[in-house]
Structures are given as structure tokens and as C-alpha cells.
Image (tube, rainbow, N blue to C red; front, side, top):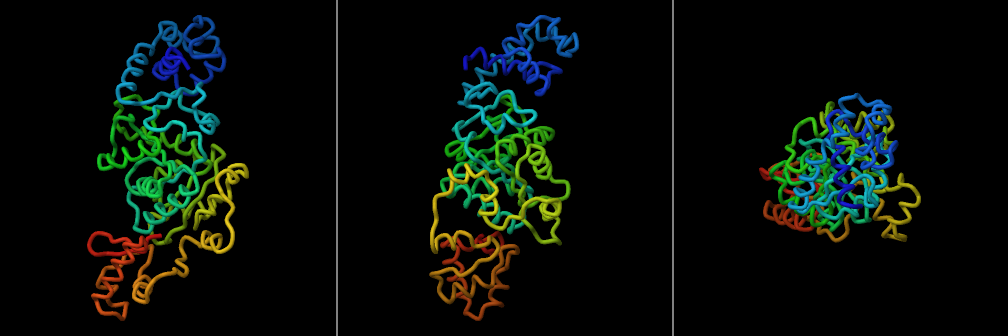
Length: 379
């Protein structure tokens, strides 16, 4: 697509009183964004536009800003993907209000790959973080792109789970792609740019205003075949993503949680309302269209297949553990951290042997140490 066409898409996004849906209707009616700007006042007003809005379009409103935006995007190493281009994600085109232009840092091609959205609370439990990390890793290992919002908590855990297994992940921002938010995710952001993509529909330099995040949630769900809600309180923004996914005819998945935990309210409610309960990656995978499953899932036979379908919440028999490691692992839970003194009290072993077993389990990726000498099973 020519630079002029990109500028006209950007321009439409900056005309006052012309929203995304109105812009799409205008382009559909006139054939292209360039034709919208070239239309007569009479033709524009016949589409239902107010006279003042039609006059703005006739005067080329937004085009000067668009030209500056193209230069700013180039300066920060950002690619612009307008709606009418070949590289625009096919699934995102299907939603009611797809962004006119996507700003992309990283590999824009993965936006068209098979993907799953994974979102949740910014204040997760240890259990929630472990589940998000594990599910994201298991799916990413099988070629599924993990889409999330780069927020603290569940979002960050999902991105890290995908990256840990050299998988692909996409972060959808509620600010400009040149703005790091939250600030502590600066390193994570750069890792995602290297191994995936960081995207936004907001102009370069846009600050992370609260109203931006519900708007961007439709992109998170729109890019994916389905949305997994891991932990979400009663008024969590993740429930907005779940609602949008349902409206977009996407699958909605939810990870069940402790009924006494406020963070489990959202997913437990979604399960009551018909969302699919998830306790391992296959629960997500089996709802994909047959063509997507065939492309992503290689044939698996015998013991390997049995091992891959173990439930997420059931540790099962883990081969290769010593008696000390098995005893210590058995004293730990995935949904509740155990203080070191509590572990000493539950295991009939000398303290040095308990500490040694904990270290070995941690090095093997089976146990995670939290601040304050607390330990949880790593799912």
C-alpha cells in the first residue's frame, strides 16, 4: 500500500466526530479513504454526516497530522498496518469496529497466526500467576501465539510463559507503542518486540489514560480464536475482554479458582454462564477449528500423549525425583504459598535435606520461591 493511502487511513482516524465505525462505513461507501477525502459535500452529507464534519473532510482535516505521524512512526522503528493492507490480521477484520491503523513494533506477520488471548487481574495469587505462565508456555510450545495486554500480573505472566519456551507473543497496549507502561515491564517489552510484536491503535506518544484500556481490549480478543480468563475480580477489565470475545463469536475459557478468593469471582462466574472450564492446554486447543488444530498439532503417540494430557491441577507422578524431593514436593501446593517453617513441620527430614531438596526442585523448574522464604509448586 502506498504511503499516501496510509496517510489517508491515519487522517480519517484523526477527524473530529468521525469514529472508527463511521470511518469504515464511509470507506465502504466511497471505495477508499482517498475517495472519502475527494467526495463532495453533498455526497458526504448524503451518508448522514453533519455539515461541519463533511466540511472538515473536504478541507483535508487530519491529513497534516497523519503526515507527521508517519514520520514519527518511522523514527521509532514502528510499522504502520492500515485496514486495507494485505498484512492486516484477518480475524481482526471480522470484528464490528476494527482499528483503522495498527502501529506495530516487531514482527507484524504473527498478527495473522493462530492465537489465544490470555488476561486476568493485575494482582494475582501465586496460583494464578503459575497457571497463566504454564498455560501460555504449553500453548506457545505448540505454535499458538499468546495475546495479552502487558499489564502487571496475569498478562505479564502469560507473556513470560510464551517467551520462556521461545514461543511468540503479542502485547496490545493502551498507549503509544513508544511508551513503556508499566515502567517495570521495559525489559519484557523489548523481549516481546524481539520475539513477537507490541501493537497499538493509539498514536505515537499517547499516554496510558484509563479510558484507553477498555478500548484496546476488543483488539486483544479480536486477534484471537478465544480468550482465557485466569483470575479476575468482580469488576475486572478482564471481564470486559470476555464479553467482547463472546460478542465477536470467539470462544471464552475460564480457569476455575478458590470460591473464597475474590480473584476467582470472574472466572467462576464465567463458567456458570457457559465459558469452558480449563485445566490444561488441551481444553483450549480442542475448541479450535479443525483446520487450525491440524496446522498446529503434530501427531503424538503412546506415553508422550498420555503425559501431555495430564490435568493442570494434578501433579501426577513425576519421574526422576529422589525420595527427599518427592516428600518436599508433596508438602507444597500450587494455589497457596508455604512458608519454610511450615514445610519443615510437614516433612520428616532434617532441615538441611529439606533445603537441599527445595533447591533441586527449584532448579528443575518444579518449585518457585516467592519473597519471604515462601514456596509454591510451579504448574
